Length: 139
View 1 (tube, rainbow, N blue to C red):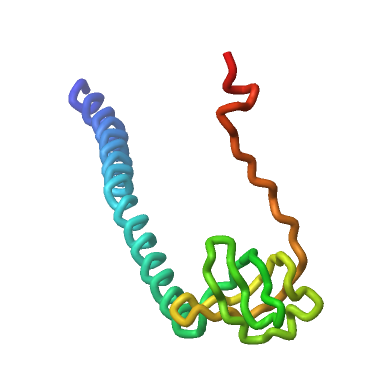
View 2: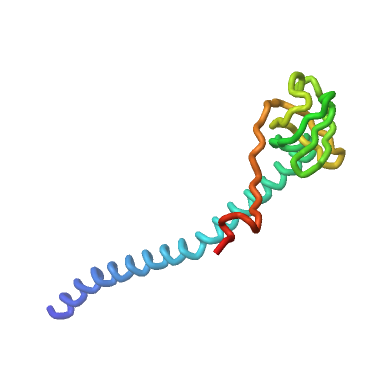
């Protein structure tokens, strides 16, 4: 009788022990393969971004905002950092010749050309310079 009692208890305990072992193995396997799946996603995103960058460089440059002085004829734009840009479509600058403007454009830095999308008059920000004779430097 005692042997039956032990035998009837053993399958339950071994069942639970087996279940715990299986669960532990599944969680351990998931923990080991999770970093590899995220690495695979990261590498596919990197490949996707490089392919999109290549198509962007082939089709044209990104749109940027430049500020500077438009020439009197509207065919050039003198940027804030003293770069001279040739304007492909000077009609967009009509009425803004000789003014300080902010333009949304597609720039080609190799040829120093810009294709303008929009242009509007801009206000120059005042640049302040401190002098040694100012009240702030007196003791």
